[in-house]
Structures are given as structure tokens and as C-alpha cells.
Length: 62
Image (cartoon, rainbow, N blue to C red; front, side, top):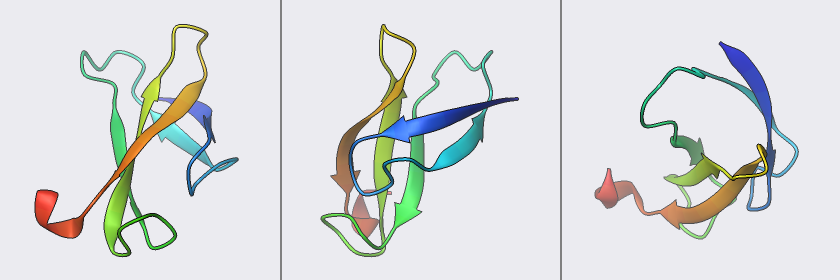
């Protein structure tokens, strides 16, 4: 596991553990502060190595 800092979106600055060997490294974290309370905020690694916010997902999209 590797700890990364999230950039942008409702979880900006949060640090989370990710599996660096995961072939699909996106993460979706439950977030009440996003566009869809109770949904998830989706983050993915950028080419620069930082983890950037992609979008918020409503609860029914899970």
C-alpha cells in the first residue's frame, strides 16, 4: 500500500492508502460534501503522479 494525497474535489488534501499494483487504480470514496451527498467522490492518478478528483457519483450509480 502507498499513501497518496487527493487533489481537488470535496476530499482535497485527504490522505488515503492505495494499492500501487492495482491495474485499475481509481478510487471512489464515500463523501457527503460532494455534488451528491451520500454518494462517492472519484479520484484517479494523473500522469504527474498526483491523485486528482474526476467527478462525484450519486449513490444509485454504485
